[in-house]
Length: 192
Ligand code: G4P
Ligand code: NA
Ligand code: NA
Image (cartoon, rainbow, N blue to C red; front, side):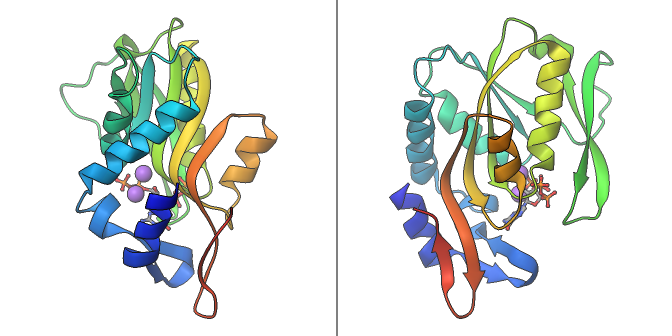
């Protein structure tokens, strides 16, 4: 998606250890108009497949998921919760996520009320790196007996292995921008 790539070129900052900072439009301040375009792009790529639910993970995935849901017929967004709260139902699906950046595991939780075997689910997230978050969401979908239709990612880091693993598994993965390289010499290099 050209608009997203332009935004990354203009406002993205490469940090050490392969981290791309995009706080000005995706992770802290949110460019809502861009989100709408991303939502439209996902809706187009996953059209006609009966998607009736979008599953994401807090925090950054939620806004993109919401913009995407607008372009499907009645399609709520459900997000995996990372923090236990008193008002979360006890009847939950949960799965462990190992975060490479944080070097520790955490749990994501989804109430059984909001995901079941009748759901045809699109997973949406902001970044795909090693794919651990997406794997946990896929696990939750499996526990629910729901159907995974595909995975939509805003920015895939093609130099980490999450994308390759999902594609090998035959999962319909659509990334709006794939960064294959980030270096001082070559800057940010996108896959076409
Ligand atoms: P993985 O899920 O693909 O295995 O990646 P990892 O554990 O390494 O990612 C941890 C968090 O960092 C995730 O957000 C992920 O979206 C984000 N992330 C990974 N690589 C980058 C990057 O290059 N740039 C930015 N900006 N984020 C990256 P999270 O902890 O779930 O946080 P949030 O959703 O609350 O923002
Ligand atoms: Na995220
Ligand atoms: Na993030």
